[in-house]
Image 1: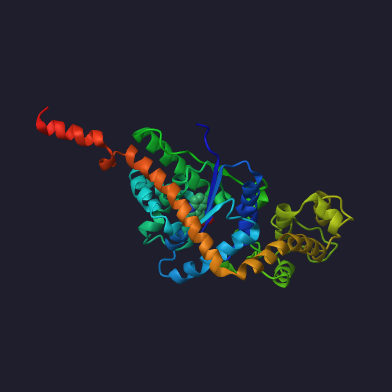
Image 2 (image 1 turned 90 degrees about the vertical axis):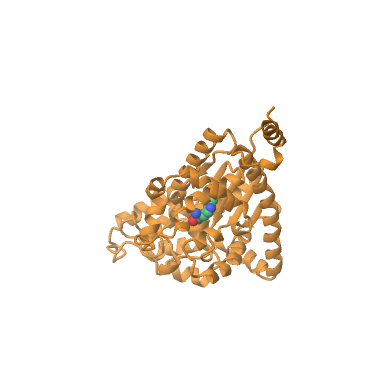
Length: 364
Ligand code: TRP
């Protein structure tokens, strides 16, 4: 049988999705979904994972499930083409996680770079919740349950996929060829891998208030761009400016296409020329920000409009999610069956085992 090409990815529902999510993975998934080159696409809202570090704030997770679903639909994820579902509604994932736990050592988890930084970020050093500590294992369950071959995610998820592949190899080595090794799909442009916050800080984060959300109004987007971090040494228009670490240029690296120049800034032939002028001096921040604003508005306007349409019928979105969960469960249950069989814990479907034990006890 030809190996199926299956896409799977998800997001934690801890807030609305922002343009970092968009360039990091969301935009790509929609393209992949529409390319027709994949057999199946699974997109899920990782509420159970979000709870691993929000255990005392279930309401936040609950409220944001619909926000993420709206952002998905607004970006063009289509339930006709992709199965969109909620992680916690697939109990098979918990069972897979439980078995995979036997294949991973504590020290291996401690070495996982993503877990390491997240523990620091959350001041968990003194007391790490076990569920949080082991979430890379549950992520391996998410991926393998659907036999995903391609996982489009941001660069920060690389250690998660490495860990998943180790689990798959170990499982297949011990129990026989059962699980599929996934491949990570990173954004093509490096600027898209980790879009900084509007304040120039390394990551967009709700708590830092430095995000541009997909659902922001046109005015909010413009205001956020106008107050964006640039080069603090670039005070007068004539001053030479830096483009490295200059958030406006990083965003242009992520979003700007050649056609944007003819549309919005015809006096420059390319981003390289614009950067060169900024570095020489004589190009003001405001002009570059206005250019970025034109580009972002063009990209976000249709998303915002579609979101408004979907917001009119919230019950039907929950229904779509519920149907997605049912479909997803069927697939996960099949994988779980295979796993149980491979691990020899499928007693009641194994007639040969029952007869063999019976013969043994009859002394045959
Ligand atoms: N860890 C991912 C994030 O923080 C979310 C996630 C959970 C995920 N399970 C996954 C992503 C499986 C891809 C595949 O965004």
